Amino acid sequence: MNNDPHDSDFCFRKHWAAMAAKSRVAVSIVLAIAACWLSRPTLQSILLGVPVALAGLSVRAWAAGHLRKNQQLAVSGPYSYVRNPLYIGSLLAGIGLGISANHVILLAGIVVVFLFWFLPVVGEEEDHIRKILPGFREYESRVRRFVPALSPRYQSRVRFDPNLYLVNREYSALLGFAAFMLILWLKLALL
Image 1 (spheres, helix red, strand yellow):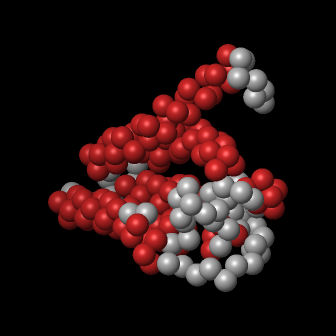
Image 2: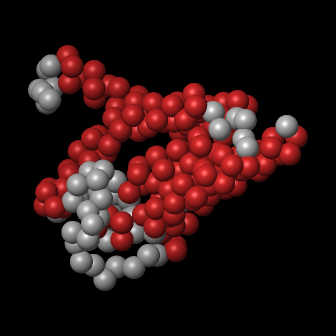
Image 3: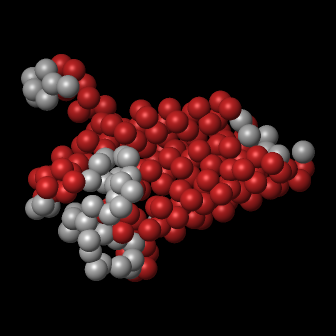
């Protein structure tokens, strides 16, 4: 992968990542609305999907309680296992919701949105963190981007901080999940 800023492919990747960062929330909302509209939930699909979605939301919550954005390098909690637990949690939650919705195209759409809107942002975010937070280069040499280690790569006494969960507004993911599940249950009852 060429990182020459004069290379057209590099410029396209940078431009796409910037556009993806700005539009990922809007794209996610459009996908959620489509999921609500097109879903054909069954009791079985909900029972299969909810645990996956809750696992993803739990990973996100755990990560949010360790994250001091742009202030301190997060190396505790899930960040001691993997560099991007919020994205892993988002993908798991999305897959769980896709399974619950019982619609193959929606499930594929969730994966496509993750691959083309969320992943391009990761490199940009890591470039930003590398510039502003000391120790990131050493951290990235020890902790993989997306494949969690079986044991922590950092030992830390830092514990989950519920105030960070609130400051990072992670409760919005839980509220979105609850609203989506309510819609699925209503559709299940009415179909």
